[in-house]
Image 1 (cartoon, one colour):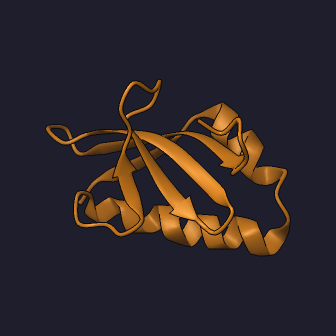
Image 2 (cartoon, rainbow, N blue to C red):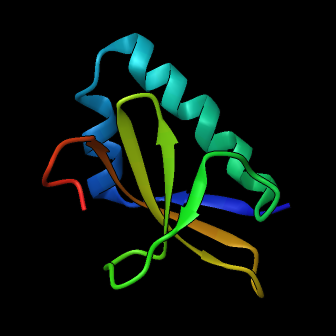
Length: 84
């Protein structure tokens, strides 16, 4: 099992979302505790963060350290042309 850490920036972004979207994202992020056996996760290349989790119209950008088993949630952003 991986532990999940939220950065203050990601926490603030998640709090600004409407309740249904926020609950959907929180459920999806909980599934990251089973990394690397997760769905809707893609490794990013040439990006500031290592991975992204797709949750509807939102993207959760995070880093994962497989050796220590820590998932660091960095940002929660609505998908648009500036997300990546």
